[in-house]
Every structure is written in structure tokens, then in C-alpha cells.
Length: 412
Image 1 (cartoon, rainbow, N blue to C red):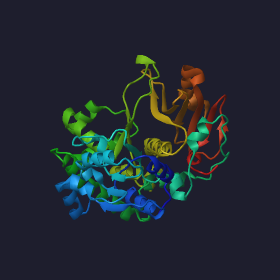
Image 2: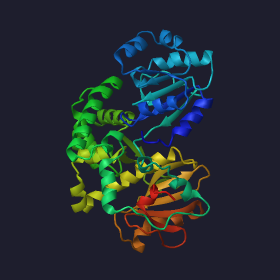
Image 3: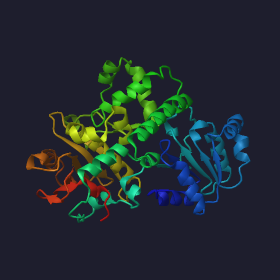
Image 4: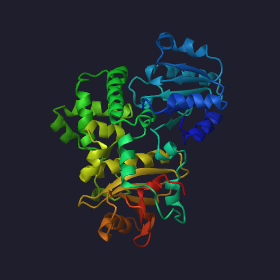
């Protein structure tokens, strides 16, 4: 098992919260992580709701099912029985003790229309992403904490080569994929993964027609990753009505295949675009959908930019789940075309601007967006960071730095 960097966070939540929900896509390692927690001393009984008998019992009489549970309980794949949430609420209200339930879900149960109670005040929600680059190599990354620190302290050199970076983008972070060195075997895994999720999970959580349209839509969305999400444009290209498309899009978000990053505002009004940007939760999945191989990325450099931005977005989202800095992730774009790929804003309103470049060589013009952001936010912008595919950390003026992408996870 790869060490998961949110393990301590889960253990802390179980020590003082009655219900902990571990949310994440299928095959990200939720079941493996719950088994590890049991080995480390969490005294729970484990039930897998993918098991036909267990599922039937829970569906038939949720209250009776929970009343017969003895001690702490792990309920794996809770999205299959949303009616259990009311029974869990009743059990918790009768005996409010910490660590009573550890739930895992391969769909965001808070977005399910059949969920009648959110367990507000009784449940802590923790997201499990595909493996981060640090988790893959057995380290815990604190890049975001470093950016917000009073003095930026990072290595001056990254060992990561461009070829290694491309390979990381192609592989993504699903644990099973990392064990498959053959391109054909990775293709087979992703193909089966998509088919299984769209045929089983979507049917379980959404009463929708046109399931045959979803694979084609998913591929279309992969071509729009790292771009502003334009519902009208996608509707026109796909031939799917906007109302139906909105439902499909919500389902794909619910099963953790895609997500959006909202636009930054900071009370700047109409000068900023309000559209969110679209990203895939795993670049291995998106490259599979697009038919992009290692060889293509090496020989068609124009393909690398959007994938690299998506890759960085995913690493930042993963690290936000365990770094001590409480921050939110935005994108920045003005109506006259000034843009910065990402803004991290902490609770005090201070921000870090992050631009991503697929080039290994840089010039002053590459900092145009970050300089504009610095002028706009003034002393609220702590630093402007340009992540690039070179190997040296460089200064480009006051609080402006070019940092190798490898330092997102390489140990300080």
C-alpha cells in the first residue's frame, strides 16, 4: 500500500467526530485505506455494500441494520444505500460517540438527490484523490505551506526531467495503473474502468436516459480540460440539450471524474470573467480518452500545455487536503484577456498566483499575468509563482519566482 497523506487527518476526525465520510472515485484506494486504519487500531467491523447480501439487508430495513451493529463500523460504498443516512443519524443521536461510523463513497453523496439528510454537525467529510506524486514516492508534500510561509524556502534544483514529467502525466494516480508498465495494459484498465463506472455507478445514482451519450460526452469534455467551461458551446457541439447536459455534467462531477475551479473575484466586479474552468480528476484518464500517448506528447508539444495545467491543478487540490494552510483554489481571468492559471487564497485574504508553462526556457513576458495580478492585488499578493519544465529555481523580481514543476513534490 502507498502511504496516504490524509491518514492522520482521518484518524484525528475519528477521535472526535461520530461519522467520518471518506469520499473519492472508485479505485483510488478507499477500501485499502480503511483496512489499514483497522490494522493501526481502529476497532471497527467492516461491511462492503457492493456485496449483494449486505446491500439487500441494508436496503430492506436500514434501521434494523444499524441497530444490530456492534461498536465502530465501516460501511464501504455508502452511495449504494443513501437511505442508511437517516438510520445512521438516529443511531448517532441515541449514542453520540466519536468514531462510530467510517463511511466511504465512490459518489459524492451530498450531491445525490435521494439523500434526505446531510448529517450536518455529526459528520466530517474527507476527500481521497488518486495518488499524489509524493504519495507515489513515499513522501508528504507541503508545497502550499511553503508558498504561504514568511520566507520561501525551496530547493534550487529539481531532478525531474521532461520525459519523466510526461510519463507522470500519462500514468496519472490510480494505484492499479501504476503497476502496469505496458501501454496496452493501461489502456485496457482505463477502458474497463470507464465502462464499469458509466454502466453501474451512473445507473445506481441517477435516473437518466441516454447513457450511450456519456462516453462520447466524456471524451468531448477531455478536449475542453483546462479551459473555461462553456455549457452552450458543448451543447452545440454534442447535440445534447443544455438542460440534459447540465444533468450529465452534474453526474460526472458526482462520481469524481471531473471538477471545476471557480473564477476569482475579490470584489473586482465585472472586470473578471465569472466562468469556471474544467478539469479532470486524473490526467491518466484524460490522456486515455484523448488517445494521447507518451510518444505523441514528446513529438506534439502543443498537446502538453493543457494537460500540464490539469496535472498541476490535481496536485494542488490533493495537497490542499493535508497542508496546514487553509486555502481555496481559483483561476483568474479578466474580460480584456489578462489571466493567471491559479490563485490560492487563504482565510485571511492573502493570495499566491501560480502560472504554469510547458516550456523549459523563460523570459520576462511569461510573467505578464503575474505582474498584472501583483498590481491588482497589491500587498494581498504574497508571491507570484511560475511553474515550468526547467530544473532551476530562479528569481524574476520582487516576490516573482520561476520554480521547476518537480518541486511540487520533491522533498525539501
